Amino acid sequence: MAIQAWGLFAQGAQWQGADLTAAYLEFARLSGGRLHQATLRAADLEMTWLSRADLKGADLRDANLQEVKLAEANLEDADLRGSKVRFGNFQGSNMQGCKDCPAGWQ
Image 1 (cartoon, rainbow, N blue to C red):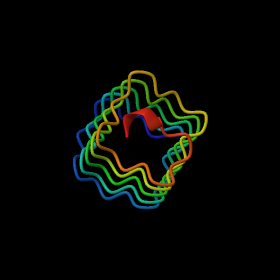
Image 2 (tube, rainbow, N blue to C red):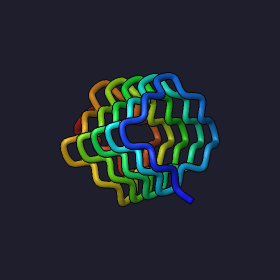
Image 3 (cartoon, helix red, strand yellow):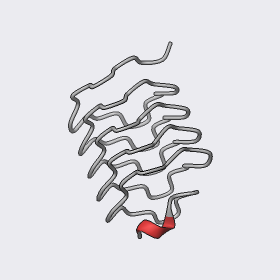
Image 4 (cartoon, helix red, strand yellow):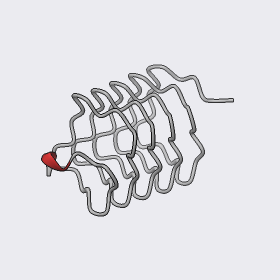
């Protein structure tokens, strides 16, 4: 069963390797969280605050990232194939090796 956590306050969460497939995390605050190798496939992260989050190697395929806040986040080797990134903020993010990251933000 997927996590249902609209508006969750979890700044600095330690979710390395967590399976958050199809999680409903709209409007959540996960700034500064560590999500190395986390699976967020098809997760709903619309309007979620992930600034300065460490998403190295995270699977974000088919995720809803519309209006997501990923400023200064680490997206190294993350996979965003098929995700919706419309109006997302990726300013200052590390996108080295990221699949389908919006390169225009670099």
